[in-house]
Amino acid sequence: MNYVLALFLPPLSILLTGRLFTALIVLIIWIPAIIFSGGLTHPMFILLAWVLIYQSAEDRRARRYGHRDDT
Image (cartoon, rainbow, N blue to C red; front, side):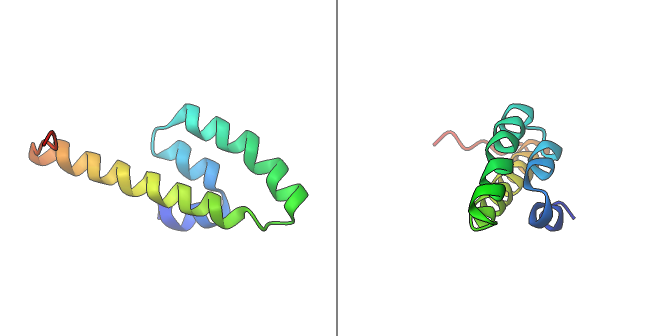
């Protein structure tokens, strides 16, 4: 569900992963980028959101199963 939201509103999607500061920075950059580039930079923000969503899910899985990635 969050991946689909990232297609339309990447900053909100990033906020839902629990990264408030990153979401605010992305929002500040995303709005002018959409206006001035005509949407050409939008895929970059979608990819950023997807990476952060994936990373958040991996962190949750690692906490749930007690895996540590300190190697």
